[in-house]
Image 1 (cartoon, rainbow, N blue to C red):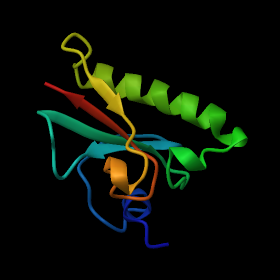
Image 2: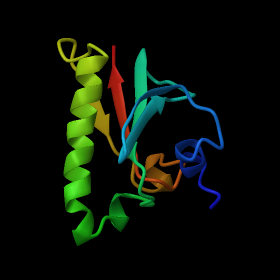
Image 3: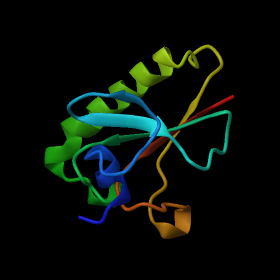
Length: 105
């Protein structure tokens, strides 16, 4: 598979990994748009939010709980943070692997 994020998940490419478990991984964005700009994604390859299937609903719910854990560990809860999906090239999705952006000051 030629997916950049799958290569990071499989440790075929380096990344500044913040947190990882058996289902999810979080790493720093290489082109940050905020002081804290992290990418949070499932290890299961899903191209975009448009490709989420009925059987993925539990995984996507767990993705948000993982994002909450990241926010707590990164100490951005009190400052506030944004969680953002870009869906499609026109909305700024650069890598075809679903991922949440966590942004904070």
